[in-house]
Length: 379
Image (tube, rainbow, N blue to C red; front, side):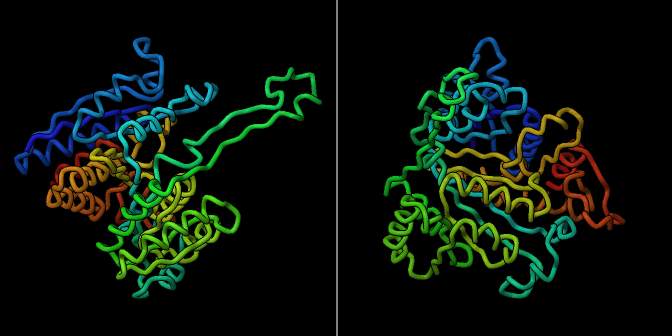
């Protein structure tokens, strides 16, 4: 099979980790007889700095991404561009790619691998207390709505927002607003992605909202109660987002699939990532309307860029998700995941996933290159 993959390497450590993801895909292609064509594209801070573009998401980048079978994305952004207006910052590229490709559901798995248990900040007794079999582990999936809500709602400023700095009275009247708005169709389609995922897992779905305060959240619950009967084998429960954030720390083993809005999903998935030992381990898939966008959920980490310190495993595991969700290559996806596990079984650790308790007798701290090479060797 032949596949065309658009690659937006991005900023900071993005080019380093995406490079290893593409090298792993090439190794998969060689082993299993597939051909992967990689189309390099610019978006984010590097596109802003490029005189040929001067904006976070050049139109030609979006059009080229639409022509590909899937998109592999590194991280975008960094302090260098923090002073730019909101619509000119690198992160707008990410939002624009999601909207332009029509990917509306973000799948973020968070599981505690046995090799990284020492890197988890939770005590074993906490993990065991919430696990259905009393094991010190968890395996959950956060399904985040991706193209609606407050990130894409109406926003602005008013009330003398441009008042001169010396006019305290006028400045006191200034205000800013962001609007949370969801349609029934937007909610229903992401709920169905969550229910379909739950059907293939442990058949439990938790809707996370703030229905005690927000009208939009009450609407989410109404739609969920209409959709749930279509999946009678799946148990549905509901949690306020503040309680969900607490329960992720107190009882992560309680969860199977969590479905939530764009804003809440953004926050909770980063919280869940810390429980796995490192945000550098977590991959993600954004799906919908025939396109797929795959990216590690970590940031651009410009402070370690180019120093051979970045963890490439999240990007590599994102490539595995691409094989699974966009190309239906399950055997090949599992091969990558097994190769990652083999590298961890061998004791290899980038600094971010080294044991927190100092028990590193069987661990070897390695850099980006050595970890990437180990995964390819495992394949």
